[in-house]
Length: 279
Image (cartoon, rainbow, N blue to C red):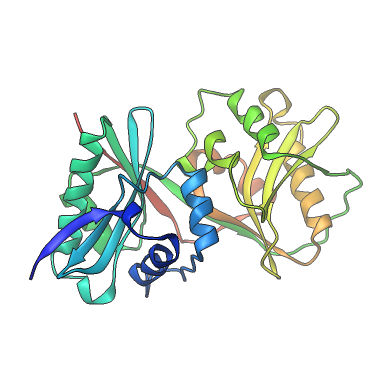
């Protein structure tokens, strides 16, 4: 058996997207990544396909590890193996190759996220030297009547990114940073509330019964004055009858003081943000 790695940029986008889906077959949540969606992820998360890796066995792709970098921090944006390659040691080999690649890239640390219930992946990352930084929780709220007379203003993602950048001491997870949000796909729509704007949200309404709330942000000076509730009510009024869903991207300490008071409960599908020092 001849096991090697090659750079992901050597594969065209369509077969790379197909390998991505095959590498996450049977995952905790269904993974569907058409080429256009993969292209959006590459752009918004600053994934470098030339630095990313494809695991090969006897000339056949067996999995992939997508790598991104911002400043001195690199990130495993996605890592998976096709079914027949799991449990063969190729996962550890791919992880070791990713660590070498990130170090050669000049990064001081390597980060990733893993579902807390994905015990096999957690053990792999822990054995490779990763330590848990924080928990990223998922939340949901059942549909409810919302009487809101406040009008939402659709805006460009750059305006939301500028609002977030005004609070630099808050360390957002990779997918919620201004750098990521400014390059998101067309299904994510940013809104502002108030004149001048006091609250911002970014939502995905592409699912018929669910409104995915990717970002909820209230300017620091407007907090504790009900703007978060007004924003959630305005979104519910705009999309009546829909369940509100917050993906497991929000740090636990960010959400706990806010979301339970807005009627949200935990979904139980949390992620762990992990990091390995490279220097």
